[in-house]
Image (cartoon, rainbow, N blue to C red; front, top):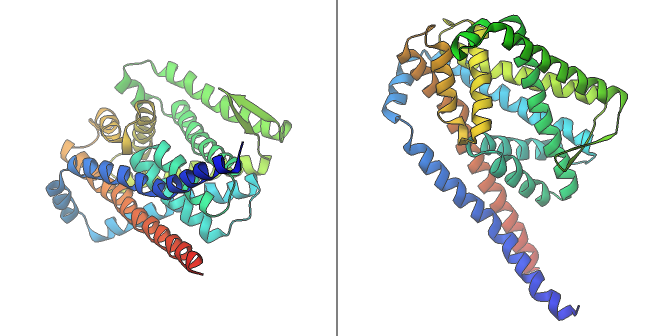
Length: 321
């Protein structure tokens, strides 16, 4: 192949690379517009007015803690993947990715923006793929452990809502706990081995990193449930709130709904309908979405725009010199 043939291709790749962030931001803008149109903003305002300031600030503080735990996945993945990116840059990339992931789905936020930001920081695609895989496994490892414990220790609320026998759910909980234990034992006994799942490779982490995955994720899911528990005025039993959250999360993942819109509400109405007034549930979920989804999304977009502007400024300075 001639050098003259590679020049047009190189120029095309550079143009595509420059256009990529704007395409992503256009997708974000459209999704944000559609999302905003589905929210009953007057009800959000009334719900906010009805909440004590201390409760709102406590919920916001817990939301910050949850996002820090999300960022902890990427910090742990730094050791797993073997890169040396600074902690502030990892935290920034992780926050933007998770805020967009929660609102717009894993393909855009968890993969698209994470690849963009890590690639701009000089991290190779193979290393980024390991970061993504480690974070996904961490998130669902803690989820599976908590779901298993909940189904074993308190299956009745879920059984009643789903119309199933509690013994079936208990059996499912045991299976979930066995799955978690199998993963941890595999990390201990087959350290460094590569698993192939549906054509994708995953190198098992060390036992210490596997336990860190479990701890970070479990604590994060518990923190999210605590936000909802507080917004419901602590009037609904915490295990019931946790069960509704976990049910809504898996439903949203199965049907690929951005921000879990509708899935979480359906789970809460089904599982908590006999534990709280409908108006109380709606108010709590509206405030939760404002604090945990919309506010971080807006901040993440501002952070990302700032990073892109700074990158273009540096690029322009290099071209001028």
